[in-house]
Image 1 (cartoon, helix red, strand yellow):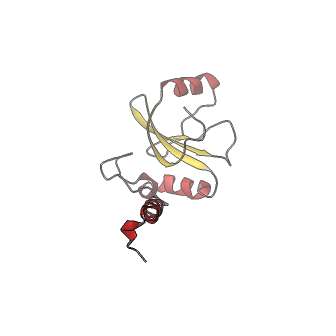
Image 2 (cartoon, rainbow, N blue to C red; image 1 turned 90 degrees about the horizontal axis):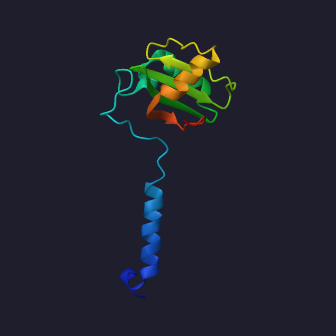
Image 3 (spheres, rainbow, N blue to C red; image 1 turned 45 degrees about the vertical axis):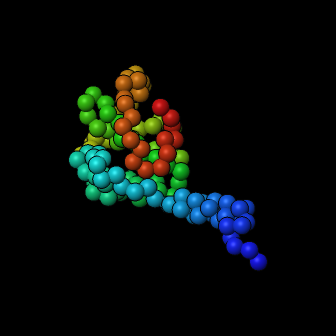
Length: 125
């Protein structure tokens, strides 16, 4: 029986296995340099956002940070929500009023995505 280095296929499979196991993290690490709403972990440190997160975390969802009119806006997206997309909040938990479709369209046009705080962007840009 030869050494493992004599069998390049085994070595390649072992390296691929190590890579696959190492890349299977379930949570993204918190970026300590990034700040949303004055905190490095908005999902845990903003009580209103933590509460909203608990309601949607079992379904496909996303929590996106935008900049709109020089203010941070957090949009909560979930497959459980209606398609009217009334889920945008300022950092203090104040819900933005987008009952007027034209006002909502202005928001969509002028918002700038800063970072996905959780999940994926379900509704696109």
